[in-house]
Picture (cartoon, rainbow, N blue to C red):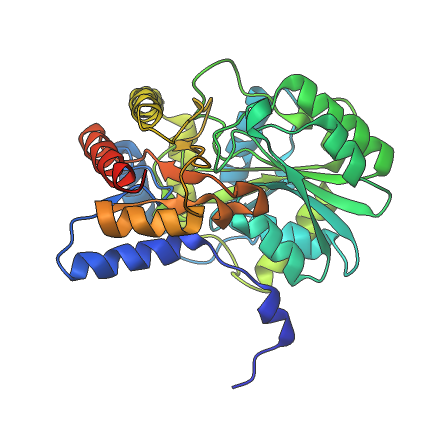
Length: 388
């Protein structure tokens, strides 16, 4: 069967490829510690699961509106209005099965062939993949270790132009854990307004922040009408498999995204939306406990990596990833990640899985137990010493 040419432009997420390799080694009897997957290792809080079960019993098992159930969108509107300090209407919200469809649908709806779209590099692989898929020009914005994995304003000024239609930002960031400052966002806003650019603000890790408060570009004057805010339940409430996310955007664009939903998924699972409603309106203790535990793990993994000769690691301000520099080790990061899995039994990702500017780095997820993280560090140290 001959596939359409556009399929050759569609990428993937290397994390799932590495997971498959790790599972194959496990099937052969090898003990693998998984630090490759960005998935909280906590269970979904009981009151959220109970809300889903109750909703199923009450008949929330059929089709719902493509935009999402109004009662859920009203709760999201209240939540975003309060946390982002703006006024949001339920009609400006589109609920999707996970946050990822908002990326896909907004690019399909806003970006034409030949347009330019800026994305962070290193960054979530789907950004570049979907920009390429629609035939636009993907323009990387380097995130640099020397500025805490943020960007230099002169780099953004250099690549943004009147050809730029769309720009993606992500804070707290995957894979580096970097966090954009208010001044960063204001600089982006000024350039976006000047060049008439749509900004996608991926904020799915907004609650997993260890210092300061979360800042959003959507409440900067002049930005609400050109911003697509992405958030969801996967990371904050340990609901990755529930597939529940949403976008906040101008109403005409929300209508276009809903039309794409009708033509693809029809709607997001109704009892899952009721669980999401319970997550936002119910107790938040589990979130605070999870973030406190992630902080303990972060401190342990950063200290442990910095104790390994040839590796240096900055302390991330958010998310649950570290992005250690391995440039002093005489091995390409792709080879090094394979070596660490095969020699040490620890699954990690090469920085190049997240773009060209990820060369010389690894990404490790600390969404694993403290005990396993300590064991992984000991194994990595021993393996690296063999090639030093």
